Structures are given as C-alpha cells and as structure tokens.
Amino acid sequence: EIFHAVCDGAGAVSFLRALTGQYLLLCHPEIIEPADVQPLFERSPAGQKMDDSFQRYFKHQNKDPKGQADKKKRRGKAWRYKGTSLVWHRANLIEGALPINPLKEAAKKRRATLTVYIAAVYARALWEERRGDKPRPIILAIPVNLRTLFKSKTERNFFSVMYLELPEADETEAADLDWWIKVIAEGLKDALQPEKLAAGTVGRMKLESNPLLRILPTGIKDMILRLAHISSDRKHTTSISNVGRIDFPGKLLPFIRSCHVSVATRGISLTAASSAGIFSVSFISIFRENEIQYRFFTALSEEGIPVEITSNRNIITAEAGNGNGGTVMVPPAEGMSPSGTTLCPNCGSAVRGYKALCPLDNEPLEVSADARLDEARDVFPAAEQKTNRLLLIRLFAFMSCAALITSFVLDYSLELPLNLPLMTLLGIISTWTSVVAVVARRKQVSKIVTWQVTILSLLVLAWDWILGWQGFSLNYAIPIILLASQATLYILGQALHLESGDYLIYLLLCALLGLVPLFFLIFSWVAVPLPSLICVGVSLLMIAGALIFQGSVIRHELAKRFHI
Image (cartoon, rainbow, N blue to C red; front, side):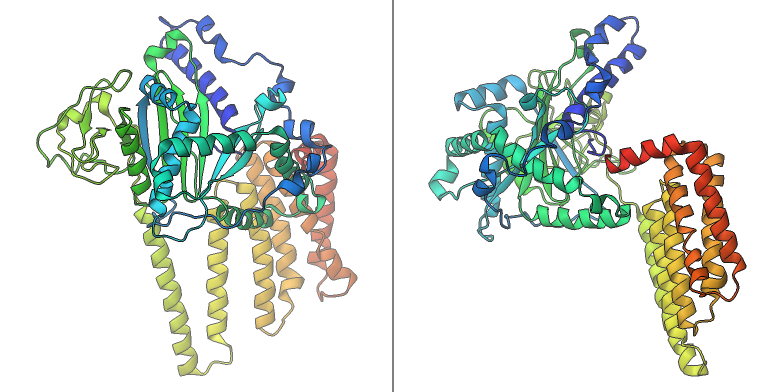
C-alpha cells in the first residue's frame, strides 16, 4: 500500500525489497546470508536518496517550456463509472495473478509491450461498460517515473502524471484489440515526451512554492486540496499504474509467491507489478459492482492467459461454515499457487481462497474445507463493516435531534426568557464540531489541541454574543483557553515522550495565539485585564524559551514543512 506523503511507487518498491530481504535474513539465517540481500540496498549517497529532484530539475524552468502552453489541450469532463458505493470508505479489491510467460507471448503476438497490452484490454472493457451512458471521452491517468528521464536516484517523490484521451471508436474498431493497442501505443509515445511531462510539473511546482499557500493552516490547505481532487477526478476516467518488475536475488525466490500493489482511490483504479514469474493486476474500487473487472479478466482468459483471482470480497468466515459441499480443484498454471484454487463455472477463472461466491460474477462456488489449506488462504482479509462506530454516530444523531425537539417543547410550554432552541442548537453544533475535530486528528495529539483552541475560542465568543454580551469570553474564557493549551501541549510532549519536532511547532503556534489578548488590552475590550496580562506574559516567555533552547529544531521543522 502506497501513500505519497513519503515516496512514490519506485521509492516504495526499493523499501519493500530491502524490508523483505532483511525479514527473510532474520527468519532463515541458515539459508540466507547477509551477502545475499546486499544487492537489495541501493548503493548511492544519502544525499542523492534524499534529493528533492523536483526542485533540482524544475525550479528554474518556465511554467510551460518550449511553448507547451500553446499545445496543451484543456481537458473537459471525462466519462466516470457510476455504481453502488461501499460505505465507510471501504475498498473492493480484486487481484488477478497472471503467469508472466503466457502474458508476454500474448503481448508479443500483437507487437505490444506489457503496459500497452494491459492498458488496451482495460480501455476496451471501459468502452464496453460505457455503452448507453453519456458519450463523454475515456481519459486514462498514467503516472510516469521521472527518474529514468532525468537520471535521478532520489527515493522521494519524483513522478508526473500523463493523461491519455482515447479517440471515439465505432463498433468494428472497438471489437478489435489491435486497434486499441495502436491507439494506446501512439498516445503514450506522444505523451511521454520530456517537454510535455515537464510542462505540467513546473506548473505544480509554482503552485507548491507560492508563499501565500505556504502560510495557510493545514486544515484550510486540506480543504483546498479536497476541492482540487474533486475537480481533477472529473477530468479522468481511471488511473493505470504499473510499478514494473520487482527483482529479488535467487536465494529469496523460494520464499516469495508474488508481489502486488494497491493504492487508495475515489473511483476505480488499476495497478500492476511483476515478480517471481507472476504479473499481478489489482483493481481497487469504491463500488460493489465488478462489471469492468469481469470484462477485463474474461478478455485475458479468452486470449489464452490463465487467471487466478483473489479478493477481499465473498470470503467465508469460520462462523459461516461450509454449505456448498464438494470442491472443484484445477491444476495451477506454471508459477501459480500450488493448491487451493476453485474453478468458477461461469467465468472460468481459478478463484483462490475460501469463498462462497466468485468475486467477479457472484456465481456460487462449490468449495470444501480443502480450500482452507494454509497454501490457499486468502491474501486479503475480509473487509468487515465497523458497525460499532456507525451505531455510535446514529445514537449521537438521535440524541441531538431529541435535545433539539425537547428544547422547542420547553420553550413553547414555559415561555423562558432565553431563546432555548437557539442555545440548544449552538450546543449541538459545538459538541459535533469538537468531536469531529478530535476524531479527524485523533492520531496527532498536537493538532488536536491546536484545533480545539480555535474551535473553543470561536464557540465561547458565539455563546457570549447570544447571551447578550456579558464579556466573559474576552475577560476570562479565551485567555484561560490559550494558557491551558500551552500547558497541555507541554505536558503531553513530556508525558508521551514526543519528539521535539512533533509538538514544538504547535506549541509555538499556541504561544503566538496567546498574544491575541494583547489586542484586548490595547483597545480596552476587557474590564478585567489580569487574565489577559498573564496570558500575554506566559506566551512571550514560551516563545522566547522555544527560540533560545530549541531554535535549531524549529528552523528545521519550518524548512521541512514550508520547503524553504
């Protein structure tokens, strides 16, 4: 699983190879020696591995080198698959393991590379699924590793994304796989020009280095990024990512069945990797339906390529038992799983694991306890729903509605001098806001405190205004909240043994917010100045202490976070 905060696919593969080698060395020291895993560790200076190649190669380029701005075609809305979304951000993962030799032979017959061949089969499946829908273009988003183009050895992010808009096909062309291969190959050849890849990358670099965007709080930047992602998602149909061949030394191969890669998605994505004689193709989708996956893998089967399917769907748990009786075991293809595959009578795929239904077409499978052998175990765990969390949210929502309805009844019956429904509504909003902030940042203690300071200060101001402006918010509440936040962050940092960089920036931010009561004093907004004076004094001491004793750590964190 890859997350781009640390590295891209190439960096993740380097880490995976080194981690796997070290793990097998520790598990099997009688077979594997340190010299056997040494090739898995990249031999390059640490400076090159940590190099920011985006800055090195694109910082001083024009936004659109060599007039690429004139050639750039503005992408409109792309066709997007629409299905029944899974709840709670669950992913529908279906992986097909293909023996590499038959796959290479099939691609060679059609004079195509593996990437072009797989992309062509996928493009045809998308076109077939689009029938009867809006005739919007099918646009493929394909990540490109820039290291080979710019001779970089960095293990940080260094990739670009090219967008391939497929031409419209008639029925005859769409039925011909060779036509799709020709279209994909020509499109990739045109899009892979270094000048075109650099044009889009330079534009994103300018945006990242914008000083106004750097100083925005993370929460606001996250919101802007979500909106940008929503807009970007509408302009491509799907993504195809092939991380390539993952090699291991010969002594490690007996312990490795295959490698696979999966990424998070907001629609449907295809990822691929090859290792140990297996080419793994993974579909990650947020939808229940599997029509596209079914079309893709059955097309490969028709090409004479054996397909072994595994998934996180339709897994029989221990409690469910076996209700289907006998088993149909098929001989595995060369390089495939040695046992435990069940033949689907409808699609003809070999299904790995203990499953009640075929993941591709939901046809019942005849399985027995033999399919639960260790060699046939499911690669992916069953994606069960977190019903406890859903139940808590529903209870919380019900209690909020009950409180609001009760406030209307009491306000109408008792004729209270206060606007009880409005106060209740504000209380509900306050509670939900605080809880959501805590849940969203539950793994980042420092951010929780910073967010709560902002939220509570705004809520106290709102409460004071609704109650006729008593002045308690400025006189007492806000200075006390700001003081408490600094004390809380410092205590948590010491008690939880947090690294200095993990909380110092947020402690400094809270200390800077602690100077806000200075304006209360300057403009005479407070009747009781002592809390504000104490808050400002403590904040100044906190800022001075942080800069004097931890100045180097703060400068390092600022440089890292703002790309200075």
